[in-house]
Image (cartoon, rainbow, N blue to C red; front, side, top):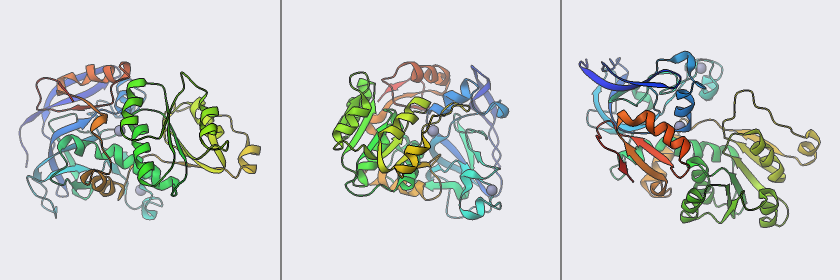
Length: 353
Ligand SMILES: [Zn+2]
Ligand SMILES: [Zn+2]
């Protein structure tokens, strides 16, 4: 079994991260030990850092968008070996409850996520159950491997929405996920694909990746603009990828009668929205929630990256050493030009991508 120490970044209390020397995780018979090669920083990590999430689980090693190399396998592990380049599905259910037995583990009462409830990958090593682990194809590098998780989330939302050929999709939010949603919508044959945002640098990236229309809310009324681009009807599908009450209300105003809204952005726990049931009923609207990529969303995400159907490169901003995690969390929040930032434990200096 694994011996020795590793460096790991712990959120010990809100607004305090400590790099500690701790024991390398001990794996069980069904687990593998992974040397972390890259781990993306996500909005959720910032929420954990400021105490909005996972408070009951502190001290915690966050980090749930990771890739790495297997260095040890438990005795009951099949299909994986030392040296395999992998990522891992972070979502774990109990496996036996009402929800799990219906393939809905995201709603399992015992639902746990690696890096959110259980120690994650802002560390030199992380362990994971082998059934959650996915091998990376040769042409998918470690940063892209760490990007499988966000892509799987966008895929999950797209499947929930069931976008059809030639239908219009409006995405509210120009973050990494918002831009990913536009790429997946295009893959599903949506036309036009409209991105609503407010950060010029991010919008430029989306344009580079082939979004049909950019709607800058600092310059135009997004509702009027989306109507204008959809013959006055509103979009067939709207994805909310910001997480505020106002943008959720906007999504419901922006969808055409008979259309569907995907609820994706995570709001404050207590946030509510005003909905007119009258409009909802007479407009035959529907709304579907989508919380994470799970199950086959992961291999599907890997395939899209392997065959360059999704191009993540323009969304990669920076790589930083583990010791810079806290600084980077704040930077990502303050510098809205930054998109995906990766923590690479073996780096000693930051690299601009
Ligand atoms: Zn994330
Ligand atoms: Zn369960």
